[in-house]
Image (cartoon, rainbow, N blue to C red; front, top):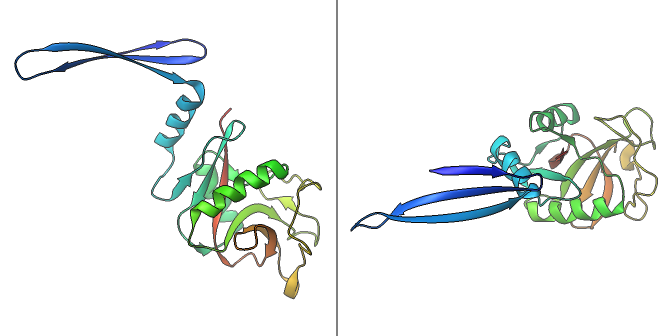
Length: 183
């Protein structure tokens, strides 16, 4: 039998355990679960962990990295993120850029992890697909990027071997990253 005792900042679980072969032994265990842990537990029950790796919590959000490498489709991949409670990654600053790049490295098996930023509508003006907000100007790209090499590089990715942001053709085979707000 378990009871839940809830306070504003913690969730206490009091569990009674019956054990022993020669009789019943009653043991009580108390588990203190902070708010962040509750949020991560709630997310793990709704996220398809067969399709996504999940990051640690970063400033009231978590990130999901797709496990499969596939041709990037910004519409379909954003819709997949929406079904998980979020949207394609929207990098707000260099601190978030570093956190998500570190997570992208751990995904393995790909050179590129796609974000939601693109300049499909206007060359050189990167905006986030989901929110339509512009990419902040203080977000740092790799040197000489974005360069629109070949005239068709419109999607922003974490370029794992080079350690930073790059623009690539939107239909390349990549993994993608979702951003999931917790609050």
